[in-house]
Amino acid sequence: MAHQQHASCIEACDQCAAACNHCSTACLQEQDVKMMARCIALDMDCAAICQLASAAMARGSENAPAICTLCSDICEACAEECAKHQMDHCQACAEACRRCADECRRMAQASTSTTGQSGTDHSH
Image (cartoon, rainbow, N blue to C red; front, side, top):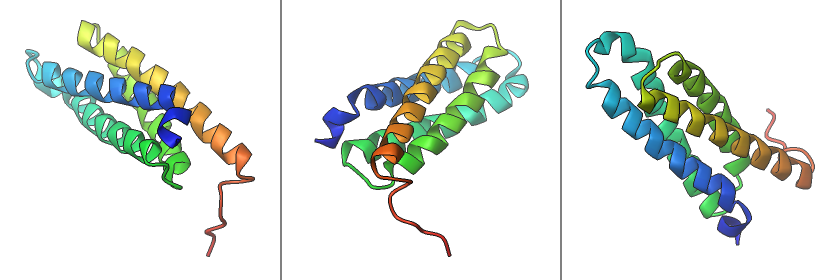
């Protein structure tokens, strides 16, 4: 079962989405919300791609490796932004994003190495 094969990555994605949703909501309560705008926007993007990646892995989608590659990139960007802010919610989010980025990168690399390249050739 695909969801068992990628259990640790699915869990990391779910935890990251929750951390990002919490962080964006907490950022909206900060005194200088404008200063937190990029953090909030990245939190929202990151939560959405993490939820998509989790679902794709759970259903064994052939697109899961590509989605996880994108997810790792967005998680890295979100972690970098959140790490700039000293609030506990931002630091916890940065940590969850780093873990998710690592898990997604590992999952995507393992999937592409077992299928040859990236599955089928979609070049035009």
